[in-house]
Image: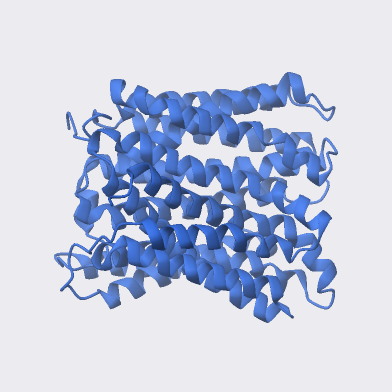
Length: 459
């Protein structure tokens, strides 16, 4: 019996939600890890976070190519099984070496799972529904990322840091069983085609080097050799890939993707929005916890309304995209985001004003993020053939993830120091407003794209 597209969506989105929760839940576990492994330096412990971030960003694009070649259902099951196995090892790790290694394996599983889940839902729905469904899929991931630290804080208070990883197992096992039983088998589009191993290596190493350089900003400073050295190396490797891929039909990333003005602009806008989203996320937690004095658990609860609004907007905005197209939705989202952050930057003080300031900002910001998630994710795949869904979606996702790493580093530079005051946070909120406006300006340059048909109308 044929599985309902909505059942496929539920399975795929639940897995992405799980991976997104895990990506941020470790942030809440970090203080507990320091207490548990007191003989380990903070720099070493930071690799519990960094190993996941670097590998996940570096492997998304190669994983997307694997999905296109070898089938989404098979790689979805493989990625989820690997992710769950690594989660179990994390929860039982006797020391930091095992924990960091298991986190790296988790990243591999998550990187395979993400493009596989996107391809599953894109191939299950007709073109006229893809904008809305991709927005919902993205919103599920955003909700997981936003709820991760709050959920982690609660679990750690009730049990220990190990629970933050072991919590993946019950839900993950259910998703794996449902996926095995119900997901349709989807053959790869190019079964006889060989993988571009040199290209995959150049991409993975290039993104890994760039990400490594960015995550070093927190400890070493912006001008340290450990920051710009890997950054230059990563840039050189990616440029080398661009030369390698020229004219190769079997390249890991088909560079003709970027010949589309729409895809190129959406990818740049996704990078900028990735910076803004990650920086907003970390800034909110640091401000509520460090300036307004909220407890860790209360901080997690206080930032929950925003993600809930994102989900509500994502559900309803698909119809808006179908009527007015991606460009109008994206520009509106970018402007709303900028307005919300600029308003907070001018009104915020050291005295808590959650109901009159922070809560309204979350509502407006949630609307903006919901519109941007739906618009960017939908526009990125709007003109792609089914055989390119995996790599096209993975490239866009990887670029947004890389932007997220830059956003975290920028937030740490501006407000990461102990005792950062209101003025430092005002500057951070102003930077967020500027990023929102830049996203809107980039999207204003987009040619008209019909959200209903996914076909470029002009340009």
